[in-house]
Every structure is written in structure tokens, then in C-alpha cells.
Length: 96
Image: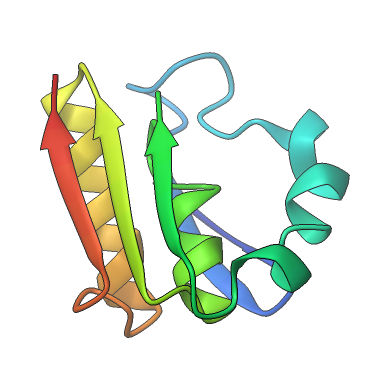
């Protein structure tokens, strides 16, 4: 796993086991625009992978985030990244 940070939110991404590079760097600017839309909101992050959108939404003030992915491995990453940012109480991961 490699450590990275976006907009003050920390992530660990799997570079050897994960999809592609382990992190979708091309969405960095889009994720940076997320903050004003999520404060106090409930957020559903479908195809969440390791929580790039969902964990940031929680860190930016979302009241509740549900991350859904078909991969248990990816959802372990969601849980790991939520804990890393002290938002595990707001983030739920669901396999499906």
C-alpha cells in the first residue's frame, strides 16, 4: 500500500493488488470540488473501490456515507481509509 493525500484527506492505496495503479489520479480535480456539496448530507458512493469519493465526503462533513463495491478487498480499503481519517463512524461499507 502507498500513502497519499488529497485536500488534507489521507489515503492508502494498494499498488500491487488493486485495480490499475491502485488510485484513480485522473479524478483528483473532481474530488477536490466535492466539499461544498456534501456537508450535512447523506452520501451514496457506488462502485466505491477504496473510498476515494466516500471517505472524502465524510471528511468534508457528510453526515453519513455508504460505500458499495463488489470487492471485499476494496471495501477493506474503505474501512482502512475511513479509520485513517477518523471518520469510520460515518462510513459504512457494503458488498454487492
